[in-house]
Image 1 (cartoon, rainbow, N blue to C red):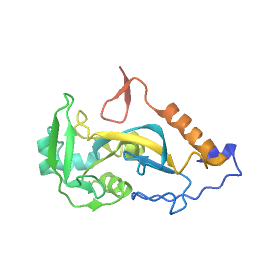
Image 2 (cartoon, rainbow, N blue to C red):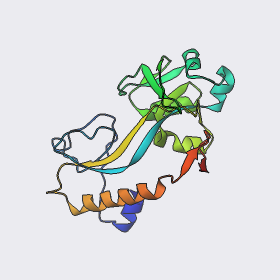
Image 3 (cartoon, one colour):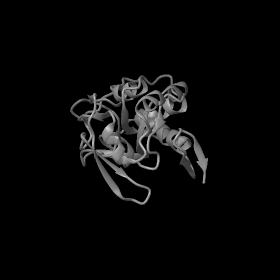
Length: 202
């Protein structure tokens, strides 16, 4: 938004951050950013990028409780769960070979916002399974590291969603095009994750 506003200072933003699926028309929103499900067939969606679900924990937590070596080891850990997940208490992890492993997730925190879960994980409370974009800064700073880096919890596409192309305002169209460029520029190309937030060329 800051980069866009620098180029278009006349545009004003009113931002509502929520994990619920809002009704864009009824609630008067110009645009939403959604992961996974787009929503109503009446909405127009533009793909921005992709996200992955990663297992992460603070180094201090792993020093105190030990580092899981297999998905089954997670049963002995404090797993911080997300209320709006399709199966909050059941984590589905995919192995490098494509095998699906299901883990019963139990822990000391169940929250409906990823920010709360990430903050708790940074403080050493437990292990989280959250989108990579939620933990990018924490991993880069070393506050969180990946757990079982060969496993992922799936993922989903990231969409810019708006009510109708017919009535699309110039400011929304320009901002969507800006988002497309930003996501394309920041998307990793030909790289794999080494488990510590760094990228390695293939």
